Image (tube, rainbow, N blue to C red; front, side):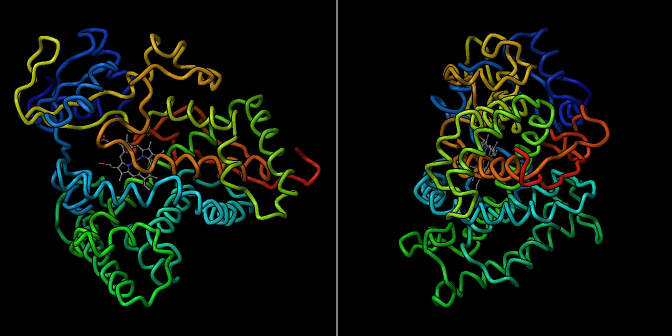
Amino acid sequence: MGLPYIGETLQLYYQDPNIFFATKQRKYGEIFKTQILGCPCVMLASPESARFVLVTQAHLFKPTYPKSKENLIGPSALFFHQGEYHLRLRKLVQGSLSPEVVKNSVKGISDLTNCLLESWTDHNVLDTFQELKKLSFEVGILTTFGDLADHYRKELKRNYSMLDKGYNSFPITLPGTPYKKATSARKRLNSIIGELIDERRENKSCSNGKDLLGFLLDSNNDLTGDQIADNIIGVLFAAQDTTATAMTWIVKYLHDHPKLLQAVTDEQMEILQSNNGGENDGLTWSQTRNMGITNKVVLESLRMASIISFAFREAVADVEYKGYLIPKGWKVMPLFRSIHGNPEFFSNPQNFDPSRFEDTPKPYTFMPFGAGVHMCPGNELAKVEMWIMIHHLVTKFRWKVEGNQSGVQYAPFPIPLQGLPARFWKKESSEV
Ligand code: HEM
């Protein structure tokens, strides 16, 4: 269980979690205990146990987050809840992220991606992760508010970025600390969202009614302003770093595997040519659904990166699993990362090999978006965003990673060291 109170928190969050999990698993098997931030935890590293906790016995395990983080996001955000309220909110959030809705965002996402990539051509070294965070945030705003007036976008961005900086800081509310600044920014975000709600209710602003705000405001839902704001901030939060992390790894893996990059480029050039070199309306929804090699690169990047290393739950009663007692109140963590790195399910798991996805993985062995009642409702949008980013990147750009090319940083999601410093430049029109 590690040191008193601290337990094994530092090993888990600031070292390579692969090593932490693998060492424990070698010693104790697929189920073992530890202590994180003063909380006793049970970690589970098999597909059956993930299914048990997240799907078949999900009612016995509630989601759990530190209070300081819950307060910053907003306590009514769906991922802090289970039962009736969670289901009600989930239906609305899922509705705004359904394939039918995402389908209509392809052009918007494509334009945002092009706009960001065009700004990368000045040959400076860029922090790829920070750049891609700009994209995932803009896509989040598009999904949440549809077309949004520039002054609102700027204010949301400015305050959200303060919230983001404070989220992983030490939660003390002394003036000047990142956490205190984040708390103040969160209050301002509430007011901005409040204004947007009022405008929408008075029908002053333009919206296609299919964005997240539209779903949450539907008159049958009877949600309070705070419930709406908490869920909007929750979705923006769940969408930004996760998707940017995945895209950063994709940029790295393509850079490190020239043959794969060529295969992906060939696939994407064919699409570009069928769109008359981008002269037509651009990428279509059906084209995004038919990106064989590109999609396998996305899936393999999600497996290798295992952005969400584990789910975090708390046992609401004493639970028995395979003869072990999980006491009420203990934290319970199904370890996606360990399962994704298990050679029993993925041969040579440390090798980047998209061809492994020619076969469908066995049930509950591949869970980049989780499983069960809390499974990621944004997975379709995230995948579309990644496919579109790859399309524009490989058809129009070349890039070179600078500096240390193998390190990993935990922020707390695993990202390439220093956010993957890289130079990007535009291809000559004759290059393929
Ligand atoms: C590559 C990108 C993404 C990854 C890897 C990812 C991963 C996950 C995972 C593993 C969960 C389940 C967590 C748990 O069970 O405790 C989750 C939940 C969630 N995700 Fe994502 N996500 C991504 C992108 C997005 C996007 C783009 C959105 C929204 C636009 C989103 C919104 C959410 C929400 C709202 C939840 C909570 C669902 C609930 O509690 O019912 N995610 N995500």
